[in-house]
Image 1: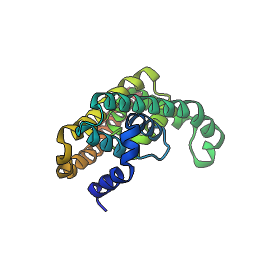
Image 2: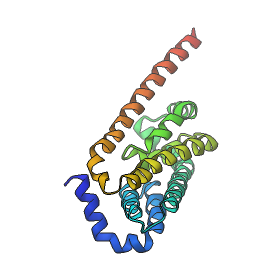
Image 3: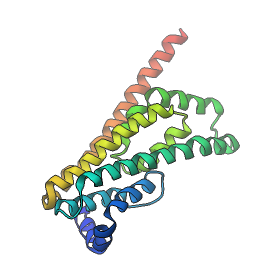
Length: 209
């Protein structure tokens, strides 16, 4: 079953709920998805935006609540990673060859270059749900995280929310193009990380000399 039928069935089966609680859904389902709890956050944003395109919901309120849900959810994930994951690492990391030195290097790397990952991760399934936890566990500076995360959330909400609203029923014709954006996002993240790794390695070796 392709994405078009998934979304159409999702709207059909939940139409009364979205019509009645669309604003709540845009906030809550996106929020819980963004700190790792399985939830149809992205499909919910698309569904609610399609309903808004018919004049049954206020698209600007939908976008604002979706953005708030995304930012709050990721910050909850950041807190979970910051206060929870490192404790598990300290307790069990050595059993898997994860030394404190390696973990410290990850923290340094993520604090310097993790902004790009946080910005683009929202368009990548899996990374969208876990980027807050990863950033928190890597001890990325919170102000840096919230800056890039808020910007990424705004781009994501405008792309899937306002983009869907503008297209209306024509949205389904453009699904392949919109889905491919996520693939390009993944390629960009990988390319960016490889460039940073090579540059960081070169700089580190040059410093040792």
